[in-house]
Length: 146
Image 1: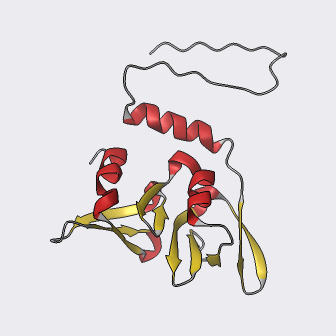
Image 2: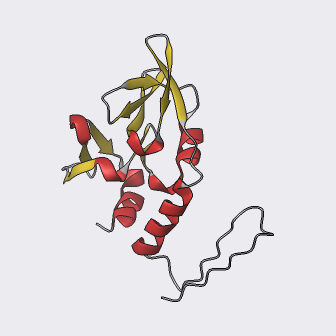
């Protein structure tokens, strides 16, 4: 792989151009890592307090009734005030949409199990379980290389 780096004090905002014949999982991982540089912190509420959450500590974000709930490594369950699609955009390529109502951090997946009706179930850290719907199964498998 050829890498060119140009250091120029005149450049205000860094930019990257990647030239490839196809997008491989390794290149996708590099892109995700680079995008994490720009990720912002997330905020949510629990017990009448605003919590600051680092994107790397997010396990899953899912709808529960009318609420949008974020689960993090420290065991917190935080209510979010943004729609799921906005959080998905903010978190970027480091997260995977698994259904209309959930996105997960693939680095927090413990195991994956296929079920008889065409869906898949994943177990995340802290014992959180989610179902990957049939509509999102193909993209999920492609992202993980399964």
